[in-house]
Structure formats: structure tokens, C-alpha cells
Length: 319
Length: 319
Image (cartoon, rainbow over all chains, first blue to last red; front, side, top):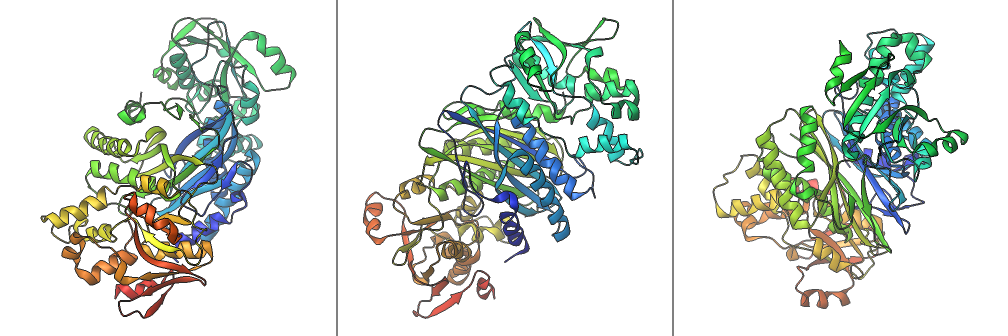
């Protein structure tokens, strides 16, 4: 038995690989088998992470395992789906049992938090990279698409923006990591928490939704484009964490929020009549702007003056 | 818009990316959405291919696209599933429009042949590699597992073995490619045809099945282990192509069939009462041995003497 066959068996024995629930058959045959309850549909998303591009070389494998699954699962949150499971295609330059144990522990931690199971995968030799494909279910017709935003809707986000981008200089060792604020940002970078419960709560209420992975402006442009509407973002309403403001200052915090990416929070549009009940139920809903007729994304600065921002236009903020 | 975003749009526009059928939503949102008909289950399999490991550098991108999808889809055939679609996570060192056009053309050719659609994916920068996740459906309880072989069953394969392994020296440029026989072997390596129709015909008839990817002995050991039985393979019954016998000779042909891998034909076990109707219907069923009580895989040579062959034991044939 080759060492990569041993790794397959190792993953098959991992705590997150047990069958049950909607997983009829997990690791070990030609395919995994999922049951989809009557009246429900299956949501599927794939993400690849490559060393040196999406994560630094020699990063903590436990944190990498957590982050890889969180990044992928966040797409299920953006559809309002209930997670079922995931496959992992892992390419490794060599077999390091300690690395594998820690990576798997990180995966298991995030999988347990998201109620997901590892249902299959592949293990090959090559430069370190991984592709995760995640599966969720949701009632037919209930998916939160990008295309349903309507003029008059509120534009909202699910939490404080820019923390992950603010953490990046710390991740790369360019800034010190020894403060409580730096630790808080690092947690948001390495262990983003997919907003699965919020996504499910938005079913039938939000008119459009996605998870913020490319930065607020770029992701809002996705909603605007798919829905055929314009989005206005009021700069003064953008929520920031105290940690980000302390580490990066107000101006860089704004840049991180608008263009940074990696937040893995939900952005969504909502008829205003839906807002009170969501707030009553305690969901983290921050109104940051609104939807109007037109196209593109506009940022309204603190003086109320508008700067038209295109999909590519956020270089404006990188000066 | 970055060049990798352009590639995403390129794939979204590919002929194999059109929605329809069981694909409720294809490329372009956070997730794809699949409908699974009532009473059916979803079969899922993931495979990674890395340059220098699974295919040579500078290989024909059209052939690579064909082969990548065929290799993955063969796992659906091994379960008896009806294909629905696939996701593609593609990692590229740089953007070469000619390469992409040819690769996509190869994907489209195989996708059309298998009635599959591209439903989503990811495109990232890094050393050339790809992970395909394929989706199929089949009636609940009808999947062809590895675990159902019973003593007395016949052991069968779906076609001539060893051609892909016989092609490998030609693929690697170690043997000439300029004969009709070499061309035939190269076709079997680059464009294996997943035995989807055969797999579906075996539902309710075969007791165990898989697709041969690791070589006949290793894959038969998977059936034997999962089913808790022994398999006897009669060497004289192994089917070979004229092309393989001409290029490799009888002895190497046997080695290729037993240990070579990459055939992507089905191996399956069958109550003998099922054989006549399958042959009447014209399915390519070759009986190569039988199932008995015990464990492991035995090869019976042309003299009728048995050589016990373990999962690792086929080094015996590599002398």
C-alpha cells in the first residue's frame, strides 16, 4: 500500500468522515451518495487554494484546515443552504504525519461547527494545494441568488468589514502579532465563521445575497450586475471592529472594507419591511445603503457626495 | 477585470455550461443548484490531475481536457449512475488563450459524449493541475457498490485490458507513435470512454462493480476486501486488444492488464443467471473468473496453478 493510499485511509477514519444524515455513503467506494429530501435542491460550490497564492508557505496546518473549509462553506451561506458535506482533493509535496494530523484537526473543528461531513476526495503528489467542493441543501426555489435585488431595497452586511484584509500584513509578518487587537484580526483571517444561520434566516426575506470574498465593492458589483440595479453604499454606515480601527486606522480600515476581500460575511438586499423582524430575532444585520434603479455601485462619502465606483474602480482607494 | 475573471466568464460561456435538465442553476452565483428527482440519490466523485504526475508537461490540451473528464466520469459508471454535471477547479501557471480553447474543446467533446454539463468551478494561478468533481443520479438503493460480491458469482470486465498502460511508453516518447496499433493505444489512453451505459445496465444485476483505475489486481482486491470474498482470475480468459498484443507482446500485455491501471473499464461480479440476458442485449461482458469464499485475489495461470496475489503482490509481474 502506497503512502498516499494510507492518507486516504487516514481521512476515511477522520472524525468528520462518518456517514449519517443525508450522507448515504461516504468515503470508500467509487462515489459518495447523498440523499436529497423531497422538495429540496442541492447547492454545490468549488474553491481551490494554492500555496503562495491563497496562503503563505509554512503556515499553521491547523489554521489552514479551518480556513480552507470556512472559505468554501461560506458560499453555501451566501445561498441560504444547510450544509451537508464536502469533498477534499489534497495535493501534497510529501507525506508529513504531523502536518496531516494538524490539518485534519483544523478541518474537523470547522466541519463540526458547520455540521458538515467529509464524504470523499482524492490525494495526490505535487505542490501543496487543495480543492474543496461543498454540498448543501435548501427548499426548491428558496436559494438566495444574486439577481433579485429591487429598487427600494436596503443593502445590508452581516458584520464588521475589513478585518481579514487588516490581518494580512500580520499574517505575512510585516506587522507585529503580539497585541490583543492583532490576535482578533488573525482569528478573523484564519477562522472566518460562515454565516450559515444568517443565510438560512434570510430565505424568503432577502431579495439577493452573496458572501463577501472579493471585497465589498466588487461583490456589490456582482449583485448590481446580476440584478440590473444600482447600489448606493453610505460610507458612514460601514461597520468596523475596534481591533481593525486600532491596528489600521480609519482610512486604511475603509480601504480594507471596500477592496480587501476575505471577509466571508454576507452582503444582501432586503425590502425594508423585513428589517424589524430580523433585528428582533437578533441577527447581525447592518444597513449600509440601498438599491435604486440604474447600474453600478456608488459610494456616498461622509459629506454625502457620490463617487461612482466601477468593478475595477476601487484602485481609487489604494492610493 | 482580472484575467482569471475573464477565464471564469470564458468557461461560463462554454457549450458544456448551459443549464437545463437537472441543473437548476449553473455557473455565476455562489453555488450551482441541482434538482434530484424524487426517489433518486446523488453520486459524487472527485479526482485531481497534476502535471508531471498524472499527465506529461506540454501534452495536447484537447486530449488532456477529454481525458480529465473521462477519468472522473468513469467513477459514475462504476456506480451505475446517470451523469448530470461536473465542476472544474483549474490551476494555471499563466493564461494562454490557445491552450484554453483547445482544453475546453476537449472537455466539451467528452461532456457531450457523456451528456454532462459544466456547472461551476474555480480558476486560480499556480502549477498546472485540475480537480474535477462529477455528479450523477441513480435510484435510491440501486448503486453498484464494491461490497456485494457473493461466492458463486462470475467475475467480469467490460473490455480489453491493459491498452492504456501499453500506451504509456508511447505517450512518454519512449516508443514510436507512427503505427496504426500505436494510434489505437494512444486513443485508449487519452480518450477513455467511461462505460456509463454498461454501468446503468448492470443496476439490479451486478452484485459489485467499480471502474478499473489502479490495475485489475488492485481493483479486484478492492472488491474482495469490501465484499469479504476471494476472487479467482483465470489468466487465459483475460481479453486483450490486437493492438496491445502487437505493440507489447503477450507477456507485457499481461503485466499491463494486471498492474497497469488507467483502463477505466468496469470490473464487476454477476450471478451467472444474469449473464445470458446481458450478452443477448449486446453488452461487452467478458467473464474472467469467479467469486469464492475466502479473501484476496488469486491468479490462475494457463497451467491451472494458482499464484496468491495480494494488493501489493503484483510486483511479481514487474520483473
